[in-house]
Length: 415
Ligand code: NIG
Ligand code: FE
Image (tube, rainbow, N blue to C red; front, top):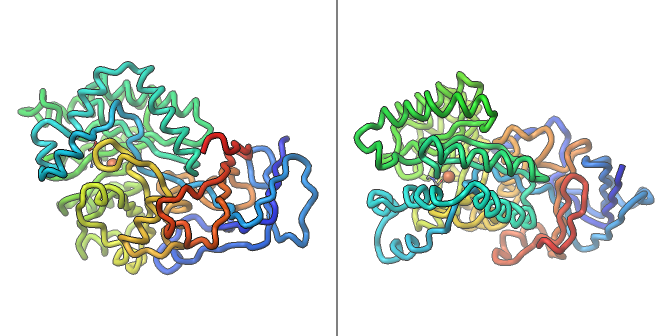
């Protein structure tokens, strides 16, 4: 079995296997071990300790003096598979159009769906695979990817099959979410129910049969899908053993959170607009609130009330929402920076939210998200930095120096 020893380093986010999610006050505790070494054997973390009892390495040895070792980022919400960027809409927004207006005029998600229709499965796969490799080089070590730019039987299956191929080709774990209910396609403008029937009666059985998804998702928002439709989708998903991770409360508060709680969803994502009653409901549930600050940053919209959510005792999680419309970046270090700068999260809170809690939001917390003996060795070594807080502080800097995936040093050529 291959062995890798990293020495003279500071280990960040060291945990016992029993710590699986961090909420409220515990979110700001970020355990570190200074002047330390860590040893990986095969694809797992074997052990770690301080330099006074450093073993002699059996295999590759890395001296990480002045550098930190982190568990990889766990990005629990992305739309990584898409055909093209949408920078024309970015310009339209600068000129005064809103995201909703662009969507209502046939742009937005429907624009992405048109572009996706014109692209072959192979081309889509190649483009997404390239993006995935770039994200791995920037420290992402587990990721969730949604469909939702297909919006037809053929298109959604094409996307989900691309995600399945990515799973097979990827050295990092991928979770797939079926987001057929992302926008109502023009052909169903007068027949919302017909579209929901198509998703639930035609698509879900094939998705379940071919094991194309781990979760169902729906964009529960005015102008997109109602709470009733979200309930239908979650119930249908549950029948096939698929839990839900839903988009809700991005622009309006309309009951998506309560519905998600009632249907044992894994997470509710966005929460830019959230009220006291919804926060209390979340406190009494197991549903993970996932914040995606790069979307309001890019849309110049208001940010989720992260402080209120953390102070209420919730396991706040951070993800990138990488997509061509509202967040054309999957760089998790930038998400952590935004969380500190705009959401007033402490660096330690943001790092916990982007690692262990992100893993929990993909049900991967037993193997990823922290430096724990026996967990998968998905790690990154930083460049020499003065402190952990420097990561969000130096927000334009590339802080990832070397990446370790499944105990293998990928080297610097990727970064
Ligand atoms: O999470 N809000 C819905 N879905 C994406 C945006 C998708 C798009 O505009 O392409 C989001 O922000
Ligand atoms: Fe999203």
